[in-house]
Length: 174
Image (cartoon, rainbow, N blue to C red):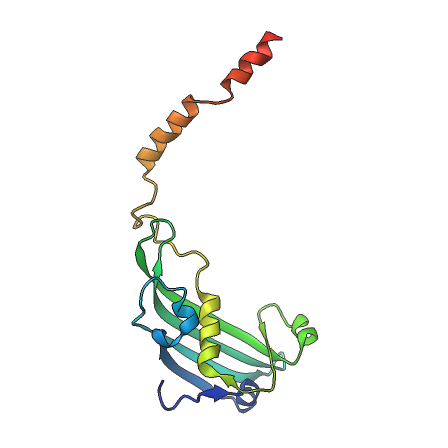
């Protein structure tokens, strides 16, 4: 971790003073993310977070961006793949659930606990939220993607063998 980044942050204090943090963490430092990756990560997640008070909505906000190249496993072909991730952070700092319910739709709530937050954990949480639920190669690049010519002949075969064809004959006998 770069020395200019604090280990812990107080998001409300940072928002009141209008601070901005940017930096990166090695992916191997993020244990919860590592549990979801397909290979031993050697890259980094870079981030830029801006803490400020929005004059229009009068809310204390956290906005930013995360970027990382993640080694994942394609769920279609089960082969390793690289996924370029770009996550957006757009939060409003609130004090409780009731205040979170009244937020404008563009904001996700960040419920202030009053305790210091580990910056690495904050970044890791946002990375986890930005990761795809199902990782897949681009369809054209995936070895297991359906080939349209093979698929067409398979559909024709299925259409010819109709398991309900005998029901048609039963109805005519009555």
